[in-house]
Length: 491
Image 1 (cartoon, rainbow, N blue to C red):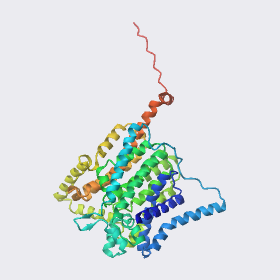
Image 2 (image 1 turned 180 degrees about the horizontal axis):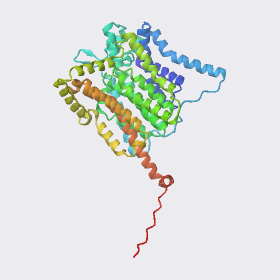
Image 3 (image 1 turned 135 degrees about the horizontal axis):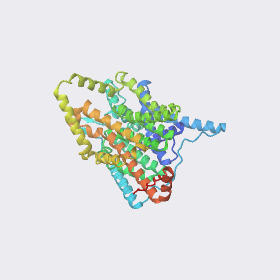
Image 4 (image 1 turned 90 degrees about the vertical axis):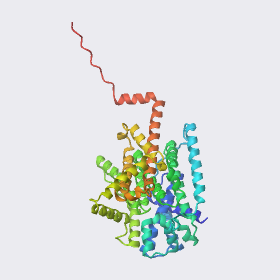
């Protein structure tokens, strides 16, 4: 019950923030899922600022202020607009194209929907009955939230916070701090809540945008990754980071289709919150965000329009709050541990460049990385399917709206490849991290594959149902060429 209270409180805060930012989609299921992702991110970003920056213990009063602040602000704004009888602000929602939750043909999508429902139910049942796991009976994966509950932050504990990230540290401990009772299952509940929110967002967004087949195909692709499904029931944060990046990637795909500034803002906001998960989140979320920012800059340059700085500001908000909390906790030198780790590994590589062992280790790491991509069952058939989709759509892809999202997936893959082969090859060789590290690529890649397949099938189906219109449009676009008359052959 205490975790249910946490869900309600954080969803209420998230709905208020969506209203304040003008980022509601107009679909209730989608907005509730977005509210969980945004409300939990709001709490995770602000809690370190309050605890370490302001030095205020996170008791019930502080929790109430953090959660109720956006609710009160949204209420005041609504009351002020109503009292002044002003012209209502322009709605930011995208008009929903109402379609059934189950698309046609039913013989195809009913089994897919049943698969999604059965696998989700099995994951929830297993995860809800799995206690907090340990490694070698020593390291408890819930150590960071237990420190947040105990409010014991010596120097060593703050270093653990910097590595775990604000979201895995404070989100599971929210209900603990509110009711003053520690329940280890809340760590797994937090991961399961992320999964449910992502699935509702995937299916609901596709349905509300008039393409339910894309939503169900995306959910099917996500739940077909064996290691992802497994880690949704564990207390590792790798699945949480992958799901947060996937939420941003989902709106990257939507922006590619709609060119709606609200979708770009939602994508950047979710990617900014993903930076609050683990120390790796600081760099992982930057890859697709950089591609989206490059797309925005390219489009504005071609159209000779002003760059949308207000849209980009939503990305800066969680990143700045996370940086302030980290600096207050561990100081400026240790506030960005992943950057320091990359610099340290690069320095070691330069110092040992003349030794054969590192080169041999990197060569072995490249082989194991290739094995993790194409020959291991941990990622399923995702990367073979990705290659197949790219080859099948090679001619249409350069003119397709999916080319920029594909660049975001490629940036994520390049980032993980550099880390696994060059920065920490020893962990790839012993295969202790490479498969979990690939989740941040596999989950967004699954969304891209589902989008590419369903868009292609939808286009082919539309052309088959309306051949006359399709032929007329093609004829109007490219008129037939005249044949030159043959010259008479003279005897």
